[in-house]
Amino acid sequence: MTTSTQQASDLPEGGGPFPAPCAWAWVIFLLLPLAVMAYSLWRSPAWWLIPRDTSTDWGATQLALHGHLSQIYSKRTALVSFPGLVVLSLPAAALSDLLHLGTLSFGSGHSIRPTAWYVWGPWTSLVGGTAVLAADSVAARLSVPVRRRAVLAVVEAALVWQVVAVWSHPEDALAVALLLWAWLVADRGWWTAAGWLLGAAVAVQPVVLLAFPVLFVLCPAGRRVGLVVRTAVVGALLVLPELATSFATTWHQLADQPNFPTLDHPTPLLFLAPHLPAVDRTPAVAAGPARLLSLALCCLVAYGVHRRPRSAAGLVWCLALCFAIRSLVESVMDPYYLWPALALAVMVAATRRSLYFALAALGSVLLSGYAQSIHAPWVWWGPLVAGTAVVLCAAYPVGVAAADGVAPGGTGRDGARDGDGDGDDTTAPDPAAELHR
Image (cartoon, rainbow, N blue to C red):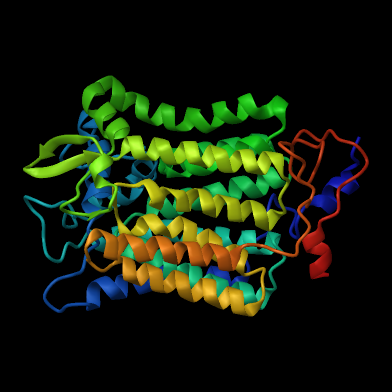
């Protein structure tokens, strides 16, 4: 039986389930809303530069706030993810209504300077900024020095900034943050908490399911059913009311995942995507089948993790690879699709020599900027895929023992202790921490 003293020694500094973000990460987190608002309000004196997809989450949240559940998944909102962010954003929408601020939805009543952005902009920026805090906690777990973590926080903020300020998809950043926290608590052997965090991540943005197979094979065999149930139940509970009130439309949005090659960036694989009926005369294709294929490929990555134990840095790198696979099979992409793979790769690169860290950080920022351009499919998609591969290669962890306390298909580095306080008297050493000391 593991003693309480031994359990306390296993915990990171501060006694929490994962390392607390450093002061630099908190400063960057708090400055991100100011940067986003400055970009949107000062870009033009005539109108505010509101992110393109703001109307999706805003419109769905307004419909939920006023009880129109059957319309959350509709042509009006174009929502294709689970409504986790919609639920979290209800207080922000209610405050906007209470203050009688202008709407952010396109169509009737839309303004070129919608005053609701005063509330919605900072709120979504804080939601997206959680990824900066999670990245710093992961870096602390990987024994990255504090000074380099400060640089990492700036790089992560630069990457997440375009997700929030340009595209208004804070749910992607929040989902990845929840995924990273789930991995950190799983690393402590707390698989119950990890399952609930994964469930919350999926409820916000199901794209994190790409990383689920890796965590599944790390989970102790006897706890995998519970992990699956907890991962699924939160999103299922949120989407059940929509299925009950408008099954056909909700199922179409969630299963087919409509995407628009004339509005977004078609890739050379567009010809493989099933065609859907046009939406308001805009051609549409189904992105769902390609995303199922990417999930299947991620299962191969998980099989590799199961067969060959990885260090903590190696596991985070494998999660980055899972997100990068998405770019290989998508028929239509948006620039922010690249963000999760780049963000996780930079975290791992921070554990390497300065040259590799600089290459990964600079490459990620340049790729994010290039993704905002408009080119022919090969000219746009090709450099992004090649650049992502370069960043992954620069971040690949070498020279670190592939143990870190992770057994094949087994637990985190707490070994037999799986969250209930049961285990033996030994705890596997942490090579990364030993090197840091």
